[in-house]
Amino acid sequence: MVCVYFISLMLLNCAADERHRLLSAVMSAGLHLEQSESSEAFLQWRDRCQTLTARLDDPYGRMLLAWFTSRDWQETMQDVPIPLSEK
Image 1 (cartoon, rainbow, N blue to C red):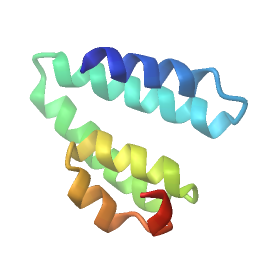
Image 2 (spheres, rainbow, N blue to C red):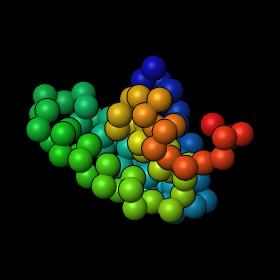
Image 3 (cartoon, helix red, strand yellow):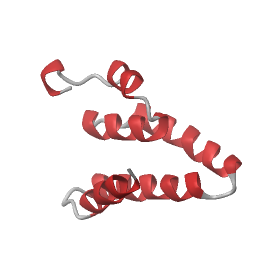
Image 4 (cartoon, helix red, strand yellow):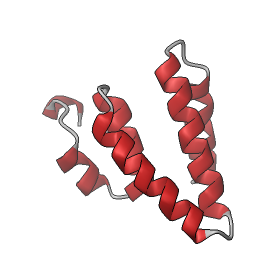
């Protein structure tokens, strides 16, 4: 599963859109914090991401970040307003 995260991060990091590259950096930090010994740092990162998710205009970026912080597809799909045909 970790390999999928790294591939996703690499694709986002190579995107032409600066917002996607920034999202890649945020998610990369979370991946490293999740594997570190500091659970407090990871919890702070997750709280900041939840705030950021609410502020993002891009529904796909919101969906990706919401899933990345919660790891719950059901919650992510209920919270992020994207067309049903694309869910």
